[in-house]
Amino acid sequence: MSGGLDRLRRAVVTALNEGGLPAVAALEPEARRRWDGPVAAVSLVQVRCAPGGFQDYLGVEIDVQTGAQQERYGRTAELTLALDLYAPRSGGESACQDALALAAQVLLTGGAAGLDVVELTSDRVEFLEREGLYRMGVRCRCAAWLVARRDAGGGTFEDFEVKGRMA
Image (cartoon, rainbow, N blue to C red; front, side):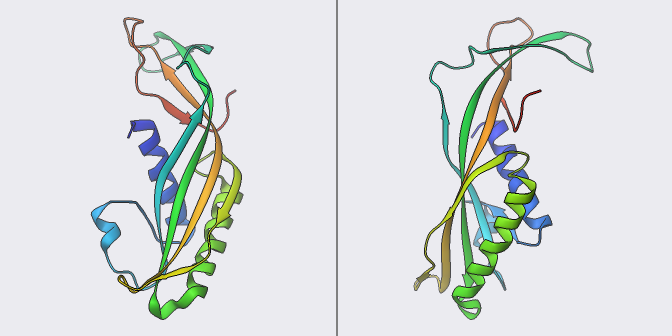
């Protein structure tokens, strides 16, 4: 995963944790830990943008550390985050519903790490017999800009950043 996309995913995890919903980045070893209450596993499942790469010129930016000018390019994009909400058997279905309400509050009031939420949808709660957990899938579609800078030689693009709005 690119650095920009991974930073976005980790920022959403941080926002959920700070908002009171324990969260981890999906597939991390920590995600396998048994929790006493609901937890959200966050992953990025889709990135949509117009074809053609970073040909859209956004202007010049001054690097505050070096004073050098860098050309910026960018694309509008739509990112879809997946939140798998898990709750122990003892919490029941309602624990997933409560986790959804908390996740929605965090994402809709503060955005998804600065990105505007376009749509938030959820699946029905299911019980995973093998794991002994309840699970609810949630999808969060967000509007974003993918912004890149050319390397010092003006040739290739550096890793891109994910931004919520362009000034």
